[in-house]
Length: 293
Image 1 (cartoon, helix red, strand yellow):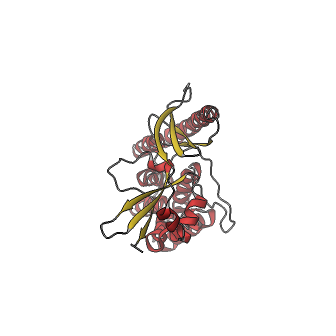
Image 2: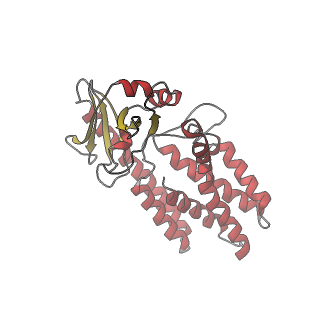
Image 3: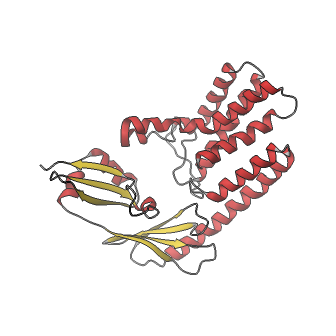
């Protein structure tokens, strides 16, 4: 889920908890707690900013767990000046909405931290526009005071959308089985069209094929990249971070970029994300700087 979606989800549960008797100042504490809870789990991205690839591996760990949800609610209640019980519930619920949405994507969450187990449904891309539209509608309804209608809309729309995603995934898997001689997996994209992709690896290339609907009859090739090998790529693999990247990413590939001083950049990328990037954009991935020696 996007930050906007997490924020909206926090607002929905915060406004719902605050309704029915909370004063103006107490309502601010309650809604503020839920809003903060909706965003708080992603505070662990700072580990990636400080520690690079190794730090990024800590993302969706403790902060995306049930113990963290309880701890955040308790912290919010301690800080709050009014209606601490509701503040606790709102903070707890805000974090739980974040965990719920992130648990639906392919990356998953460490739900029962410190147990080393990631829960993932693998159904929704983290930037999913349909999911964002659902929480946007819920936010508008609860803002207007339609609490029961908000609950009914969420109870209807979320399961219905997830059922569509299950069907879409199944169709993508069936079509991917036709890629003879290639290792293939399917992933959600969050796009209005091409909602799922089949990513496949052959002996000499990686490819991404679009599945544009749950009833698609064929795959549509949208991206392909050759698998390169050479001295620079082998040199970059001396880095423990690169070795870990290659082990953890299902479909990695490398690009070489020479520098004027005789050195080079080797960029290790994930084809699941690379296909959506514009050619002129700086590539996302693990950038390894090699000097002339």
